[in-house]
Length: 335
Image (cartoon, rainbow, N blue to C red; front, side, top):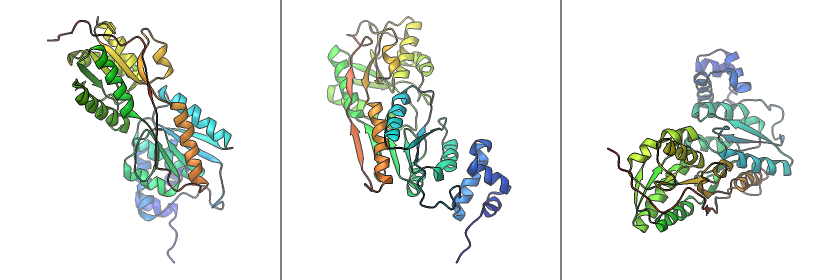
């Protein structure tokens, strides 16, 4: 029988000290991302897995992990609340893994905790499909805001939400809509942009993509994107999320563009900030708390063997009309 790989084998394969391998698995925050990646890739090549729970194989930890790419983004507040509620109701502890919009760091923190949890819910992820499949072979996984055929997913009905927004803007008399995009690696961003193009085609509207992707879709990013939006010449804008929408309204007003008289703005998600600003943001409301709760409920069903794969569940959305949309006023021309 082949000898089981040890941390010394991993150290030799990765070209690092055995103590570094130990830290990478037991306390990943103390090892830089590049070194951690070398260690985990070496471990994978030789078939080594951390033994944090050695001697407790099959034991239940009654802990789950929720992966969040940017904990400062208020989008995740309701998801975390719903997920925490579901875990508490089931008698589980929920670990929040903040991955900083960094795929390498995401691999590091997941590898550091995977032996401590029974299942993982990804509220967002910057990992590719190959990496996610490997994780799903080791622990039950549920993805939120992303579709993968072989993994259980809970997504928002992006197509219906964008369609309602386009119908609303078209009904007000807008003939051109700009799209302010989110992260280039975001599945939801691709889905929303595709849905807007399809809706515009059916409604005979013109759509334009504004500038480059906002890799960190924050209020500041929306503010900074105002010039690009104005340059499109569109009289209405659909933003990837509410944070971009709120920032864009501020950026437009700072440049003397009136919202909604000159340009109408629609956000996405209906997070709390959308109704705390002046003017209040018209937006597509996503059931984020329900999404978080459902994600944990579904991963627990996988953990308990009640389901092998629950497929993709699509949650309904609705358009909330507030103060940032109106009939088009003057059209802005830029040199």
